[in-house]
Length: 269
Image (cartoon, rainbow, N blue to C red; front, side, top):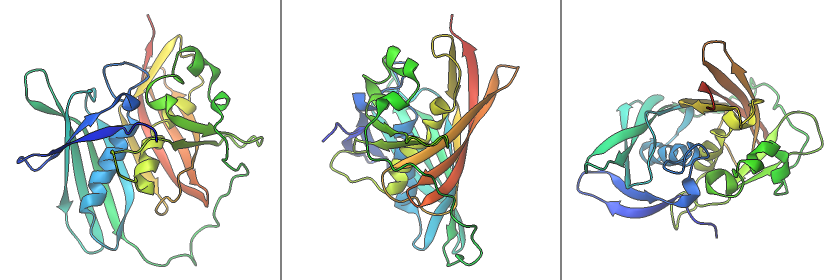
């Protein structure tokens, strides 16, 4: 089994769960911080831990407030707007600093809504033609390999597949457990890979540009299922140094949601 993204450090008297990130969580932009995927999955896990029965996540916004470092992490979640039909929950991920204090590095806020049968008014499921079955790193941008993105860290631990159809959907799945000795939920796996939309949607040269996202917002049509998830993404660059990435998201039943990410653009010196 692949190395997990996090190993347990125990639950302290402060009410947080404490964890240590592993090298499997490393970012492609720096070897001193985590990629956005594992923290996103961890925040989703925390949201799920406080979700009332009968409610499902309909929207989740993940804000990256600073580098999510590789020192001890801690996380906790709480319901900030209780309700039987509409509920809001929030989770925060803190990172231990050199001065011995924790700072908030990432935060997720989620709306959870009551579930019911509305299949009679739902739009027909949008389907895709490719079936994800193979580990095919060649289907990601070739520059990723040249930059070492497919040899170390989070991106290297993902599996990619793209079929012969030209529909633009790249299928992705994780191969690492989120937390050691745990089987992650489909939502946790899904949130881990959605962050990759920012890279898949870019047509910019990795050697000339960086495009780091500060957030990810996901709107869902239902609860994701399975472990392969499809991403059809496009990065739109503005003329003032920032832009956004928008993506249609799929599980193997069809369209499951849409994501958007704010992107900071910068030339490599």
